[in-house]
Length: 530
Image (cartoon, rainbow, N blue to C red; front, side):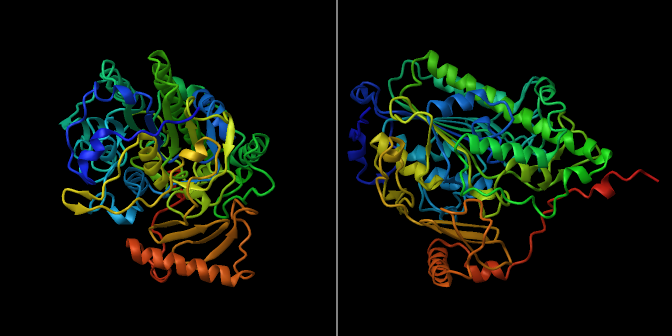
């Protein structure tokens, strides 16, 4: 179907300056009802192959259904870290340019779409400076921090109540479970607009499956015993399934198990008994997330809005390897437990990739990404191979909404968008613009991707070079064979770093090793008390 690109009348009144004017009335926008609604769903700390439609054994029928009637991206990237991903998503800039919205020079998607006649709604995790109502959202429900107790809503780090309904503190009810509540309010906000002809933008930011590992018992029960075969066997099964799905071809070499992770067979019965329930609860959290996305899709279908709604779903980073344990409760799942899995299961969840959250390797940045839009996507069930990054979401929505990206906000200059629109590639056409290089830098892990070449380095370590057209999982470092390519990309990276305020390669090389523990000390933790 041909997409109509309409320029909204109110954009002319802005003269390139965003000052949060009142929205146009539904009557004035009646002629523009063909513009799509937008839903951007972000989950938290999910591995590349966790979903069924990306090779996983976790039951995700609702996301699988969106994939089968939409597109699965196989080369879509995030910033490898929670806040930094959200900053780039919201602004279309590299996260260093806004310092997670702490610095001026940026506008949010909501601030661009609202004066273009969109209702702007958010439910879920914010984890940025200011609060959503201060950055263009009409309605907000969720929490302002990085992670919470899924049953109490209290902030995981401080214990504070950072739950909000619009600008007000929200006291959670006794039957609270955050994944359910975030969806409840998203649907409630959509229902409030039944008599409003304006299209909507909904940012749905789930905390699942971020630690702590909390899930309803009925969901955990579905996965009891499913992970008894261990991570080595499930990595093999997932890789085989990825091949069967056509996602992994001969260019996707299954990476070796992380060298610091033991084989499942080498573990004692007591060690397995400790580790196995972690994955059972994690799977239950992903399952519950899928159930709630199904509720949202059912609502869109019942209200006749699904066909003209563009839905994006992706994870904010790869699986998280950092062990967490507060207290002496070793069994995850309940409201009083406070535990996370470590690199052992994270390595499996990221099958077939190397490394994890925070790293600039594929295991940190490559995310499953589903796009669903019946009125706009024709190659349903297909795979999209266009190399893309979440800085591309802003220009995509701006183009499809017929919105105007401003040059100023509150009297200060706004940085131009850094990404490219994916509108054409969603329709199976060539990209509307040539792909710009993609850059990463967080916690001294850094990389640059230009075409098929990727130059990447861990903190304190030197560059590695990969041809991702031949080696998607970064298993064969060929930097010694192509020194000129490495030099060119290294210069490009440093020029970018200086422009946006990221760390240069030299600074990353001279940094300190990470203090984040990636493995439970099983000998110490499970030692019988004297």
